[in-house]
Amino acid sequence: MKAFTIELANPRGFCAGVDRAITIVERALQQFGAPIYVRHEVVHNRYVVNDLKEKGAVFVDELHEVPDGSAVIFSAHGVARRIQDEARNRGLRVLDATCPLVTKVHTEVSRYGREGKSVILVGHGGHPEVEGTMGQALGPVELVENVEDVDALHVDPGTALAYVTQTTLSVDDTARILGRLRERFPGIEGPRRDDICYATQNRQDAVRKIAVRCDVVFVVGSITSSNSNRLRELAEHAGTNAFLIDGGEDIDDHMLGDARRVGVTAGASAPETLVDGVIRELQSRGGVLPAPSAPMDEGVAFSLPVELRYDV
View 1: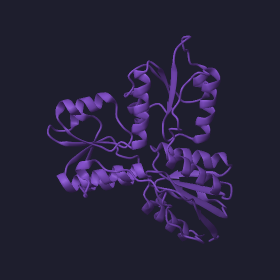
View 2: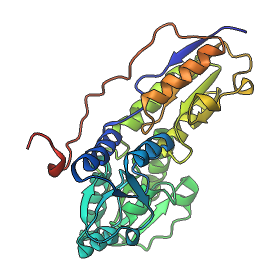
View 3: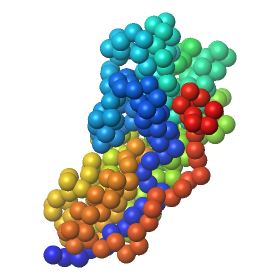
View 4: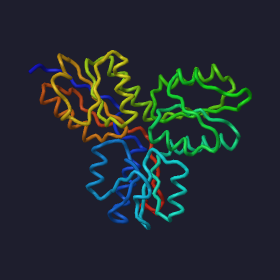
């Protein structure tokens, strides 16, 4: 067995928005009892979702699956205005686990619509966050996924434009897209601060640092997780073999090859227990972790809905 070094990225794993969403489901189960209904996966991680199912959460695709008089939780990715209206009209008890940074984007989209601006949304089609954001628009909204989409946009002369972005995109790719948007439409308006969230930015910076030193990088996260996929892509762009895995059980000898240094990170919806499992698996294959490190405290926390706080 050939020894190799394990290097951990930091920060990694849970962000404040994911931590808040999971806590909302767990406290709702404690306070109201099972079942608690959740529209869509509260966060994009198979382990987390299965754990919450075992505790009594019931995940549904649409609100018509939620019985009258029940409590329903909206996922961290946010929902369209029509979903909010439907829940209100049915009298469901709504607990909103939408990440506050996603809510910020929703607010921007709504404001631009009230101001008569057409909105360009930079994001990945089909992602729940994108669907929710487009569903919050009060006016025209167009989705672009890459620079080519920007070049293909048809905008009538004199149209007032604004842009927003999905919060979990590649920072580098988004910069290129926004740069092209500003070239084509010099008068386009955007948010005062980048919509890409702090956790996405920090985890991308961290994986860049280890990728240039490592032969292989494992990103712990589910395939449905946008930010986890971006971490894998960034490691690959650094010239490193990179794999997106759900846990240590996904690792095989082919992935490791003759690696002398192996990096490990985790997407914002992956719990540290999965990282621990990956480390144990790597150690069983000859990996040496010189300096264990707990996930970095990024100094960000979001408050819970009032009805779930213990201090009120």
